[in-house]
Image 1 (cartoon, rainbow, N blue to C red):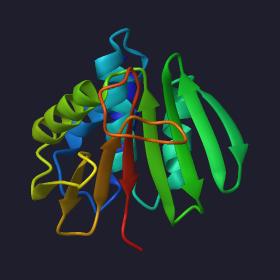
Image 2: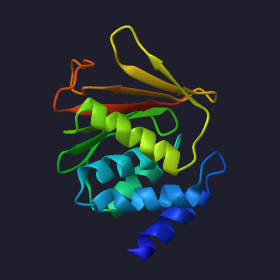
Image 3: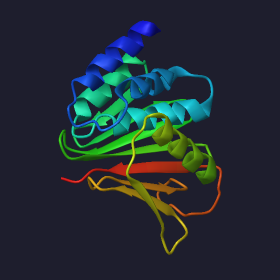
Image 4: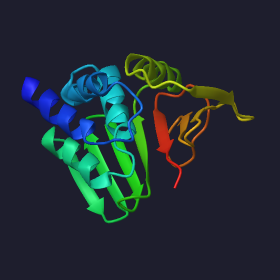
Length: 168
């Protein structure tokens, strides 16, 4: 288990763009195979946030943790149990969605806890007209939280999506 943290930490430390606590982020990512769905969603989200513009490295982290990885060049689906990660776009220009069976409120609490534990600061929260919350950072990163699925809403259904988009 500690080898996974060490490998993940080395991978993350190689990324100069990170403005967060690399060790805390590596510890979060180490929870990809936890039995608690809250921890798994936080770990998948941490993996995405820690690897902007590094889609192939991100896929490797999930493969190393023995998640199922399927897809093509511009649409990769990764899953373990009730948590799905979808990567849309090219190697350097992609978005990352973490869908799960958590309620939208639980997903939002999980995300805010993750941001606090990894010391990624500078986030502002805006409530949109539809009731969904959007987090945005001065570097242009956006995080949307909704119900997930093809027709996302902002109600408290038994599913959620944390959608991360980086500026390019």
